[in-house]
Picture 1 (cartoon, rainbow, N blue to C red):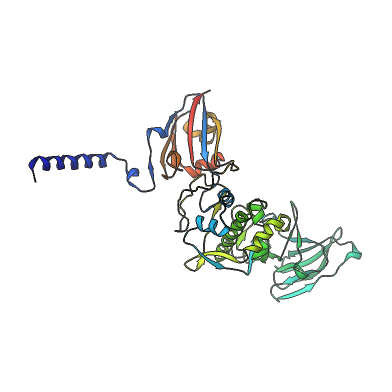
Picture 2 (cartoon, rainbow, N blue to C red):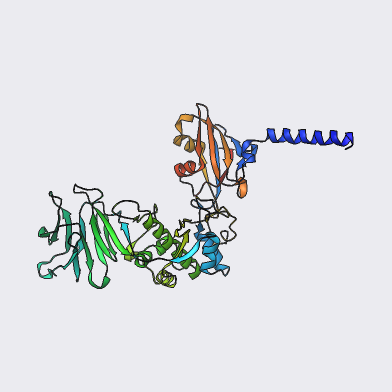
Length: 411
């Protein structure tokens, strides 16, 4: 090799080594975006802080707005599901699911008097039809634990009257699968299936209301709570498959010993009979039993309102980070959003920093505008500094997502 060429190659190698040493570690990690000077904002003593963002929710799995956008472009519900959960397998599931009814905060199980009401004794595995009692102006039935731990059944017509005692945990249902109306401190809601009084732990008199219902009837009370029932049928069917699969995953990984899934956004929202809608009922029926699996087990089919244009990588291969071309259709009001706060509003949440002087985003996930979702950021003030995750920042301020950037000006 010519000496001059050897010297040139050696010089290039030294330059490349110098660049590699100078780069921040985050720049060398795939999927992570390094902090830049554009990710730091000086904050004057009195300032407006504008937070601009994309999406609504955690961003993992199916974007619900994206499902509607995809359906409007002609995708079938199977194509929508395959896009948001690539590599998951199609399968079938049925049977019942046990749902904690969180609105029932009392230790008794109270239902309205209805024709055909029955009481169940779990220990004896017996079902007894309750008397009509219309001639006694009865309005409610109750199951409540006695001091001896046995459940007692009573009826109400201005005062409670003991009807009998059970050997095991009690529950109510109606003949022919008709709904039972549960009375809670906040109102009354009808549920299909059976309503059980179940103990969170052995001994004691504490009880939770648990609705044991078929998977398909459960979905009738979930799908319209999670997505508008009158959206495109393909989108609503995709929601039915995602919700059914999520329920089977939770059933395989129960939340507690006495129930499998809850009825709030912490699991997926379940509203019972009052939530049902003919359009979402049709979506449940059209997709009856269809679920996704991974390696033979129910898939964790997470979903959120809007991806903002990029989904977020989950803990499993079928929840990848990927560009979402369907989320940004004209009807999605949360694809892009912004709000304005004062510096004092930020300081009130982290008072230890004193007067806020600087906001710095330390790293992002590397996907989409501004380098993607915030992984961590730092607030610097006159009295100190605090470093928080993007998810914590979002939660404390009630932001729609952690895919954000800032703008600062004096006020």
